Figure 1 (cartoon, rainbow, N blue to C red):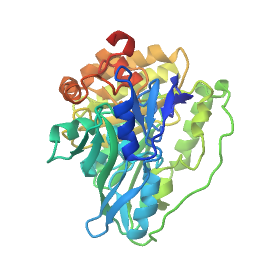
Figure 2: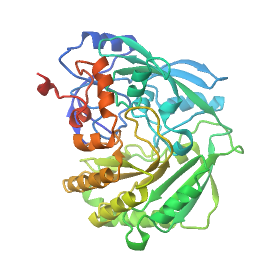
Figure 3: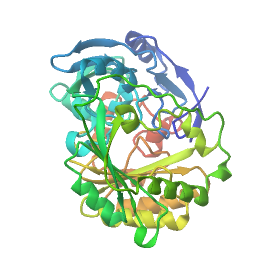
Figure 4: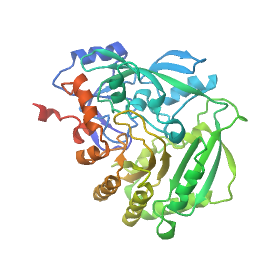
Amino acid sequence: MQLAGWGRFPRVDAELIEPPTAQAVITVLKESDEEGTLIARGAGRSYGDSSLNTQVLSSRFLDSFSSFDEGSARLRCSAGVTIDELLKVSIPKGLFPAVVPGTKQVSIGGAIAADIHGKNHHRDGSFCDHVESLTLALASGEIKVCSTKKNKELFHATCGGMGLTGVILDATVNLEKVPSVFIRSQAIATKNLNHTIEQLEALNDNKFVVAWVDCLATGDELGRGIVHAGNFTEDAPMEYVRRWGPSVPFNTPSLMLNRYSMSWFNNFYYWLYNRPAGEDLDSYDSFFFPLDSIKHWNRLYGRKGFLQYQFLLPEDTAQKGTQAVLERVADAGKGSFLAVLKKFGAGNSNLLSFPGPGLTLTLDFKNEASLFPLLDELDKIVIENGGRHYLAKDARLSAETFKAGYPQWAKFKAVKDKVDPQQRFSSLQSQRIGLTTAKDERL
């Protein structure tokens, strides 16, 4: 069958294996062809080719909960459980995941493999900072329980390791006690990039802070945006929410997405929030997962799909580098509906984890031939400013650019080679960025 990530680029014809149990996963690993390669896949919400190969092992049916200790806010579940399914169980008990991404349709295994982050990284770090332990099936079928205390080296390679060390079977996750699941939020319009960054700093004491940026604004308005900040409030109910919205029934014609339509949208969105500061009460669903109510929203970018481009710049070059990227994007006229700027806190010990102190900017671009030279230019700006790219969003990064951004890549590869000497766990992405070798090159 044909598979793709959420960006719908690239696509690959793949054999999809869907083991019904953890034991069946082990059987597949023991009985599969040692010359072949495969990669684990959760809910398929990584954007590019990190969960693509000619053979894909799905965690779809690994969707059970093993234990839930309300007193210690500790939950153990299988890797195929999604954030949404976790919320259904945890919210009635007054608990919430410490870190959630921009969609609740992410599997726990995928959240660990990508070491996902949210709007509160400056306060609470990334998802794996709240993973107590995980169970990993190696290529040999051997089982390893990993944590910061047991099989520590393998734990730090698996967290953020994009599924290249083995198949995550289950995990024990620490949740957070919250007074409600509603957020008291505020939105502040900013005049330009300097003002946007100033407001991110000024609002940094809030638990959640994120900025939308108008990436088509130029001149004195370059980098203008809306900074959203919020905190869980006590004067609201504790209830699971599911919003129902429209579904995009077909691929939007590519010509509809152009400089003019995106400029109109950006101007409208800026006008919508360019009002006197005030507070709103938002459900967790609308605050954290605004696009989840639109089914198949990725079809809005047309049949060829889109590429999401996310990078991190360290604190000393963050403003200069981000400005250079926005200037180049605006000049090219390839603006993004979803341009998100966040301030990260300290990084962690995971070898390929993306976050670290500085600013991260995320951009969406429709897939077209003229986009790729622009992204190559942006890569140079990012690397020249000491930055790196988020692997869960990547679909075309070069090996040279990847290695320049991830100085611990060789240490990661050494761990992988130790537990997977035949390189059986491999993705299109890992082959492209030089972490594994394509099958035909291994023969």
